[in-house]
Length: 476
Image 1 (tube, rainbow, N blue to C red):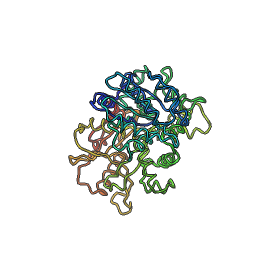
Image 2: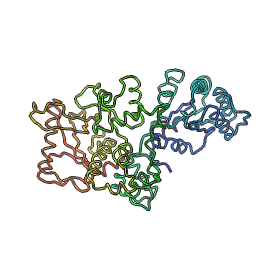
Image 3: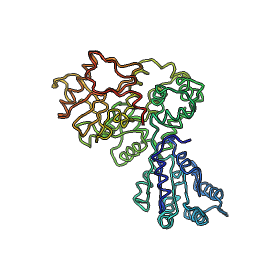
Image 4: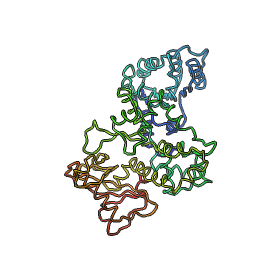
């Protein structure tokens, strides 16, 4: 059973129903379920289905191609000598098919583009000179090496330029989808437990599939990440090396961004990460954003060139904070960390990331889903000595609305209702004053509390205009 993915399935079905041949590229983060989506969308029925071989040479790739053709019903003699011949054989298979629409699914295509194989020109020739001239071919490609899909196919400036007719970007599950998935696995998890698990794993279905319903959440996390034979023990290394052909530059950017919660400008990245300021860095940042590992956003009141890049991948953040710090190889490192200052601080940061990935749900809860808006962050850059309010200030989520209102979001992870006191009231007031003072905005500023259990009303809570709870984040 497939959970969610309604929009993506609709895209695939639209391509199938088209009266013309269509070229579909499915891309997204590793482990997010790209292959499963395509197979489920077409009920595992393909005219031709093939998957490239990892770390194999051209000869082995072509032999595997021949094997897939035979599995699909084509009588093949010797293996093709090159990719032009390989695609010619695929044409023969398509010609002999009586199906109204021939679905060609090529998975792990990046692995097929081996050194000096001339794979891309052969693919261009197959599509441009033959398949696109018919009305009955649906070519669906995907692969773990997302950067290859993006740069060699979607952004191709040669023969494949603008040839992709449908781009399906598969993103991580939302909280709601993870809750549905947990129910389908009969895990018996509450919303709070799903939220806590999401803060560790994000919405990556593959990670969630390892949860054992016989164990508690803390035991599961220990088993999956910290046990001697933990199934995701080497995931960090495999994650980036599978997505990117030259992962070193990507890991360098990720590692640098992992040092700063609010993120870094490009200039700061170059300086602190000792990176080269060139076109390669631009591509690395774009690829990481495409895959959902980082987000690019503007600081409120700043120009576009001052954009900030922020690490948002839940697993990577968890890896930096806990897995890397488990130097003693403690099999119960997570269970022993619960309740410690390190764990409590991480909970606050991880919950903020959850909120940043569920802005649509926040807007719906505030009844502003139909209002045009943009999201930004902000921190004070003013010399504190020259300011009327001397304390520093930072806001991780501002919803800048077109109806002359700015929603200033305070995100707090609490196990019970939030109780404000005078100190907390002063902090929020300071942030609001600094925001108005430095940005010189004329818009009204509303203070929004986003938390798990809600707000306990008292003498200090009146500054909060609206409260968004954990339940709101779980809504579609």
